[in-house]
Length: 360
Image (cartoon, rainbow, N blue to C red; front, side, top):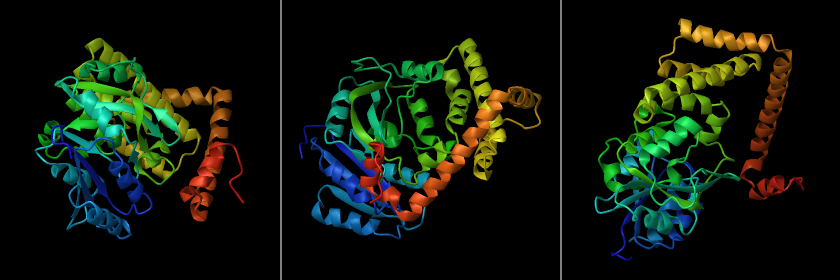
């Protein structure tokens, strides 16, 4: 361990991720950057996850520490507990979700980016999200980007440059100053909310390389959210709560109007597509969280306007009906694959990506 280089505290909270945890831990062990310590937090796992973690602690007792929760915590509470355990001696904190992993140069290149300027508090990079490279949009190179400018890219151009916790490196002092770090009132978008809050006061660094991998072929929270068309609800919530910090009053009003209309169009489409109970349960909770009332004139004007547009536009109505049929077929295929173990077979995923039949 090179004590002259900044100490990075890596954290992985986990619960019942035995299929993925070893790959996650191995990716940290393969880092080319050598001054790090690793904290694993077991949230009452009932599968082989704890045994896997204990195995690596025995192999690397000087680098890896395992903490067992006495009581079962929610996912975000477990994340917050893990972050509260980082060393005050560390300069940077790297969160790695238990079903994700890091490319070997991740820590080194992110620390190098962070060290370019003391004003940088958050560092991002390109990320492999399933099969797709995500979080592009900054010109090369972008060693130091004003935090407010990065947020304006999201609110004005829908360019989202900070993804899941795995994709970011954070300055440890910023993490330790917030207790708890993630605000549960923003679930399921608490990770984005905290970054908007941090970038009010610090700048952003970016590495133009793919440094992290986030899984999208398992039953993750993010995959479930994407199936519910969460992105426009996310945009409206962030706009309402943080847009004022980064936009002029005129920009704020214009962007909120555009996003509200897009959101209510999504809801109207969902009505015709006969979306299921989970879809409406999620969006009902989001509307309530954002202060919209189903009985308000504002809501009824926008929502019923979109419904009327669908009814009076036969081509759009047919298109939505076809989408509904395709969605149902996709869900049935996913259930069959899950039942047969397909989702856990990496060979089948690669074959599918190449357009081949995965069956023997």
